[in-house]
Image (cartoon, rainbow, N blue to C red; front, side, top):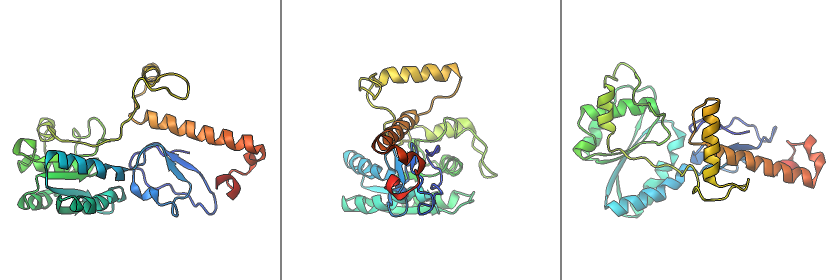
Length: 263
């Protein structure tokens, strides 16, 4: 079993009853690292907690000493922000604000006003698309974009046209205005694929596999996914595990959900 969405909710598995092994190719949230709570959860993508090391090196390299964050209340995927807060503070970077936007909040004006009053120029905004549209639209209205010296970090997993959609009564920005507001923003992401010259399990290179993948997507046709490589690795991981399990003891095919099998 694998989870299809980068921001999907926690797998609703009752381990003491079902012991279902879950391998996700896209769930990056740090909360899934809790082995006591999710003993049967694994993933082929890195957790977003790793981003804190990238932020630390990047801020040091650019000599940025003050940073702020903007997240959604109740959004567990942003727990890494709190972990990063302590790390950055210890490295000489001041976390001047860590604002949380209540769910279903449409008016972003107070939050951006607060950031501007605190002279927050480097803003890590880990939000869902709907809230991100409202925030960036408000940033355009308040002249808080890269053109005015602000640096916005946004999630890299947004859909290609996420900014070009209607969004509530307070969203009035036109597509070209959103493009202006987004011009110059930054995003962190895991590398989706290894080097094209690297050899895969099938004995072909990553570059050859990607050519096959593009050809198949065009043939069906379906959109290509950035997570295709992680999904591929998840399937191979499951296959290797099952192959080893059944070679050791074929009878375990009948008791996948028992302690000896899943331990």
